[in-house]
Amino acid sequence: MMNFRFWGVLLLIGAVGFGACAFVVPGALAAFLICAITFALVGALFVGMHSVTKDVPKMTMRSSLERMAASTAFAAQTLQDMTGQGVGGAHSGIDPRSGTATVVAVTDTGMLVNFDPVVMIDLSVTVDGRDAYAVRLRQIVGKLNVARLVPGATLPVSVDAQDQYQVSIQWDETSGMRPTGLAG
Image (cartoon, rainbow, N blue to C red; front, side, top):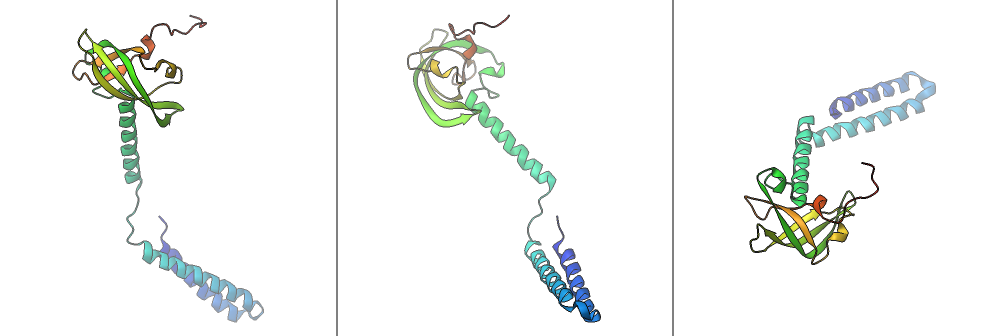
């Protein structure tokens, strides 16, 4: 960080030097006085800035990196929550169960992530032939999958065995929507 006091004092000393030269060199009186006044004003400004900023906490590279890391971790957690891929989610590898979900309602949140919409999806989930239960997901949906989200549509899901409300839609397993024309 710039040391305003050091540079301010240096400029004030320079102003005194220009003022002294103004009287030693008679032909350049106006030029030396203008330089002396300019140096004195800027020097006084720097000394004043030192007194204002001396109590401001210093920003260090470490504190900046710590704040950036905390922000990145928060953003990653938010993204995991929105996609259902959190540590305790269906993708965690803790005995996920396959099931089906019927789309009850879809609400656009107005948010986009990489130009893909973020939506609230109300589902009726059925796993292992048990009674259906309601789940609401906030999820990023690829543009190719948006058309599948109509009320009454059935989607394959993966459900965490330890928390039945950790549900992830298995977009790749949706029947009838296989890409064609790709060289294999």
